[in-house]
Structure formats: structure tokens, C-alpha cells
View 1 (cartoon, rainbow, N blue to C red):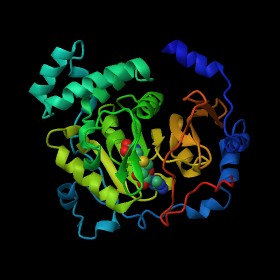
View 2 (view 1 turned 135 degrees about the horizontal axis):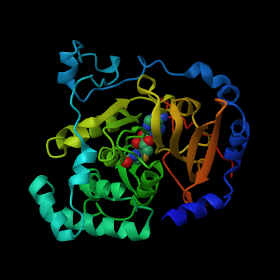
View 3 (view 1 turned 90 degrees about the horizontal axis):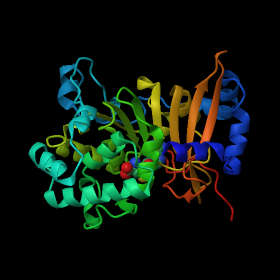
Length: 346
Ligand code: SAH
């Protein structure tokens, strides 16, 4: 895999025009100078988080903290200091994966998975290791632990481990496993990383992340979808306690999640033709962002690394992680449903 990565780095893959324009503004300039350039008039639009509706998954904890949850929309989910967080990465490390048999017997002893799906998940993950970028042992473990069958919605029964994206209602989709594996690999999540996902959707990507770090944050803009996935996580927490570490918020992910910034890693799972400046600001120096970047009709999966130079200036490096192949993600939209990308006239 190291070789494949080196190859990617060596190739200079043409990126979409819009990205070139963007990078021209940023790369090689100091961060302080470049951000205002990119922001232009957007700087006034940074969300007030009071405006952004949010629902907590830990009503009890909030009550303990003396905050009523009756006004569902008045606060963001709060991670309380001192509350023990379930250690998904530790569980993942303790899981034997040498053979299918040892794995199956460990899974049936330790978890509540349906055996039929366990068998399917093992075969599917093995296939992904061969056919996709899924190679890093930590990522393979996370894929093996995450019950995709619960995140694929009922109307797609039978396709839980199919190699395709699937509709999940509200015009959203659960991402193609090949693309999930590539984006997850690119993030290179370490157990102490704080990771933000934009576009919770089905909840599958954040569920994967919860086996890679205890610090997962995810934002969804479609209210009924947010509530559905929030309820799903609550339901699954009993058998899959690592989902309890997923901090989730209903709101516009364009503005990130200021209270918890900076993030070591940011994964954007909706498409946009520029990098949202607030997300760039909320990325730690040395941090990695992965996003489907490009015009509305096609995007490229880009890795953006925010580097801090010795003189304190910030530069960005970029890489097309899908080797020039284009994808089509659900649009990154605002609360009025309008895409953040400039429409394309064909
Ligand atoms: N990561 C998801 C993929 C969901 S598809 C999964 O694993 O299933 C993309 C999602 O991005 C959709 O649910 C869409 O509603 C959401 N989205 C679009 N614009 C958004 C925004 N401004 N803020 C947060 N989420 C957004």
C-alpha cells in the first residue's frame, strides 16, 4: 500500500478547475491572508449555534448538568467532562481476526450481531481488502465491527453488503462501501484524533469512526433524517456501545462545530465545489480533510492536508485519492435546501 500511496503522490492529477482557482488563492500564501480572500462575503454568515437546531442523545446527562431538554432546539449536544467514554478502538484491537472461525466465535460471544450478517460481513470485508483501499488493520477491524445491516434502510433489505450506494430517504444515500473505505483510509484516524463528519445520513460512516477513535462529531441538516439516525444509534447502543461516543448535531455543517474545534480530521460526505472556509479554519495544523470536491455533476475525492510552516504560515496540500475517477455525492446544501455549489450550465 505504501507504494500505491507513493505513486499517488508522485502523479500530478488534474483537479477540477474550480479547485485550481481555489488552490491558487491558498497554496503558498499565508493562512492569515488567504482565508479572508476565500471567505469574501461569507464571513458574515458564520452560524450562530443558537440558531442551529440540535438534539441530544444523552437527555439524562443533560438533566444532570442542569439543562432542560424540553427546548429541543436551543442547545447543541454536550459532552460532559468526566463522563466515561466507551473505548471502541480498544475493543477493535482486542478482536481476533486471524481466521473467520476465530472471529465468528469471538463476535458471537461478545456482541449481538445476527450470524447470517456476520458471515456476509466477513466475506464482504475480505473482498474490500482485495479490491479497495481498505488495507490498514485498524480500518479493517472497524469495517468488521460495524453492522452495516442496521444502517441500510428497510426498503433495501437483501442489499446490506452489496457494493453499491443505496437510498436512505429524504434524497440522501448511504455511500458506496468502496468510497467509504477510501475516505476512511485517507483520514488515517488515530485513537486520540478528534474527527468531524459533515452529513450524518444513515449513520454508517460515523459508526465506523467510533471504532477508530472515541472523539467523533457528526452533523446532519435534514431534520427527519437526523432524528431517525439519532434514534437508531440510541437503539443500537445497548449492543454496540461505541455508538454512544458519537456526538451528533442537527444543523448546517458548512459552519462546522465551533465549540469542539479544532478537529484533527474532517470528512465531508456531501458534494461541494469549494472547501468551506469555516471547516478549513476548524482543521488542526497537520490535520486532514477528505471531501468530494467539484461541480454538481461530478466530484473528485480530495485529501486536503493543512500544513503549518516553520514561520507559522499555513499551506494546503491536496491529492486526488480516487486517481482521477469522478464520483457523484448528494449536494452540500444550506438550510433552505439550496446547494452551496454554483450550478453548472451543460
Ligand atoms: N455519511 C453518510 C452519507 C450521507 S449522504 C452515510 O454514511 O450514510 C450526504 C448527507 O449530507 C445527506 O444526509 C445530506 O442531508 C447531508 N448534508 C447535505 N448538506 C449538509 C449540510 N450543510 N450540513 C450537514 N449535512 C448535510
